[in-house]
Each structure stands twice: as structure tokens, then as C-alpha cells.
Image 1: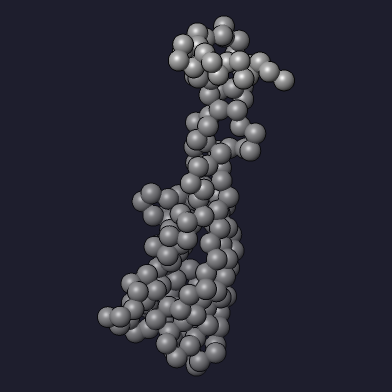
Image 2: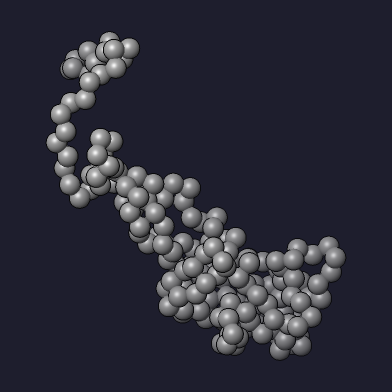
Length: 172
């Protein structure tokens, strides 16, 4: 493992770039918490990334798992969501004008995985995160979390324009 001490997602891969084609090295990740980017903090990040020397640069393959804190769209309670990133990418060296900036190894030979992992992790975050499948949400009358309390509000007046629909609810 050759993780850069300043940031655990910056790998010094200079030694790999001087190896012959086919040489590979596995980087293991087991981080209690890490700030992937300004808008994404993850915890319990685990996994591995295998970098193999190719004629074009380094081919990386592996999988990383982590948890991030989200807010339930139904009850607005915070909860931890597991997210993962599967990498199968070619990191180009030397970087050219036509190469993707996220997949280019700079001349310093420090491969920063943060921008790429940010993209993969954010793609794995659900569009409508729910704390659990049977979440009951918030009470429309008082706003209490229905997962914690049972509300007993009197039946609200039905809009006269919708009163005809009430008969459909009472039929068996």
C-alpha cells in the first residue's frame, strides 16, 4: 500500500510508471472517514484498486464501498446509506490534449482518485433516498414523524369538489 499521507485518495504511482507492461500493484483502502470532495463525505470506505501498467498508462480495476449520510425524502430523518463504486478505467500517462482530465495521470505521478470517486459515488446515491422501505413519512396535519408516533386527528373536511370521490372509498 502506497497511500499519500496528505490525502488518502492521492496515490503516488510514479514507481508503477517506470515498471514494464503487465506489472500490477493492489492498493487496499480501509478508511474510517474521508472527504471525497467538498460536497461528499463518506465513512467506512473499504475496498481495493488494482493498477496494472499498460502501454498507455495504468489500467485500474476494483471496487470501493462506503457509507454516506443522507436525509429521507419521506420523514426527513438523517440515515446512513451504503454506496459503492466499481472502477474499470484506463488512466492515461503522459496526459494528452485528447485525454479525459479525470483519467489522466499528471507529470507529478500523483493519481488523485477523488474527482473520479465523487462521480461514481454520487451516481450510486438514490434519487429519492428512503431510510427504510416501510417509512410512513410525516403527518400531513401536524408534521410529526409517523414512524415514531401515531397521530389521531379528527377527519378533515373534504373539499366539496372532491366529495363525490368519497363514496368510492367506502365501497368494498
